[in-house]
Image (cartoon, rainbow, N blue to C red; front, side, top):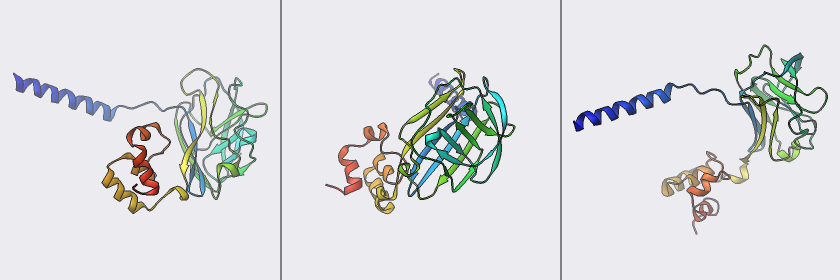
Length: 231
């Protein structure tokens, strides 16, 4: 009887694991994250957009760009790309996300997605022929740039046009790690092996030191040892 119970438990666990591996999660709302990566600022976007409540406006031709003082950002290819624009915002969202002016990305890839909230009408930019709810993914890089030089004010900005699923566009700034925060990677790996702690992953750039779980996982003394050596 005990053997049968254990076998049943193992079978149940196997079914649960298999189901989790093959389950398909719906795409989350589109979010673009700006991050300082060494001497560059990188914008990474992913997620889906629900076009319900918006109306198709006019065709658009543009490229990856950020213009904080105009509440305008496009992520994707650095070359000229065509797309569609949609209007119908309810006026929910910030007008600007900084005081910087237009800066074109030096490189980029993926879907062209953007938003311009200042002006009448405010517009949402998506790839040509975009089907509502389809997952989007893109990336753009601004060489030799910082948040200060781009004029981006730290924060998370959300524009919405309804209360439904994925009826919003989010822009956030993530604290990245420039070269001055990185120490020798061999040293980091040695400390990781010695400490067995998430703190060493911070130095390798695998996780962000500002994340709460890092603080919980590692003591202040361990984190200090990563940057100034053992005390």
